[in-house]
Amino acid sequence: MPTTKVRQPSLWKRTVVEGLTIVLSILLAFSIDAMWANRIQKQELSASLAALQTDFQAIVVELDRALSAHSSRLEAANTLAQANESTLEAMSSDSVTTLLRRTLYTTTIDAQTATLYGMISGGQLANISDFNLRNDLARWEQLFRDHVTTQEMLANVIVNDYGPWLNSKTYLNRIQESPPRFEPALFLLFADFEFHNRVETVAGRTGRGINEIIELRERAVQLIVDISDELGGTV
Image (tube, rainbow, N blue to C red; front, top):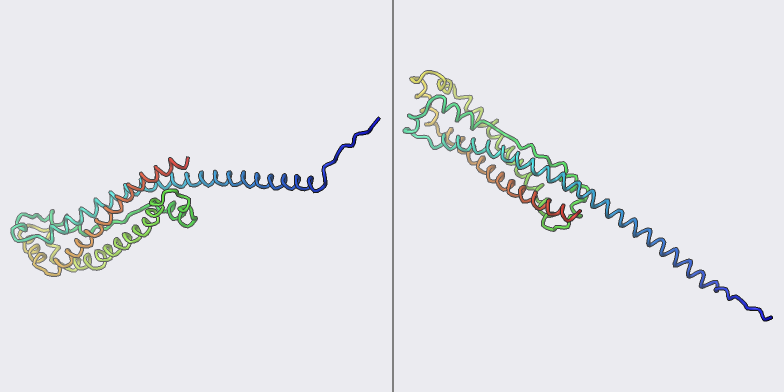
């Protein structure tokens, strides 16, 4: 009875098959790792964007508060700067005192920026798909820093120049006294060129601050919308 030989695969074929199997296994493992890493990256980005959106919502509220304070100071400063003989006659000691106090009020913006700074330093901005959103977020940091500088310069003028100058005018104490002494004190103040110069400086710097706040608020509101759109794309 004839015997049948079973042909064994050659050594090189087995080597090729085993090699391909190993390579495919490695590629599959890398693919799974990449998919998992991408998923984690998206989850982290979504969490950061959600926190950032909350921060900007709080920033809008804070900007509205600052805008109200600046607007009140600007209105008071303009009223005092534009006062003339006829308007002085209609002013009371209380109204003048209130106006002066409003020009002396300083404010700061307590904005939550830790999330944005963390995203910038951690390189997360590069993971945002919207090119314009990435640029606007990077630009926001500089704009906000510029406004902080404006605020500090205004506070310096009020605290170190305008306020001390007013305090040095002893005749202003008469504003709280009876009308016969109140009116001469007012005329002395409003006839003083230095007073007009200083109060106009306060008004000018306040006006600049208001313009910056309005721009920051508009950008913050738009960023909230753009972040919401980006969050929709990261799910």
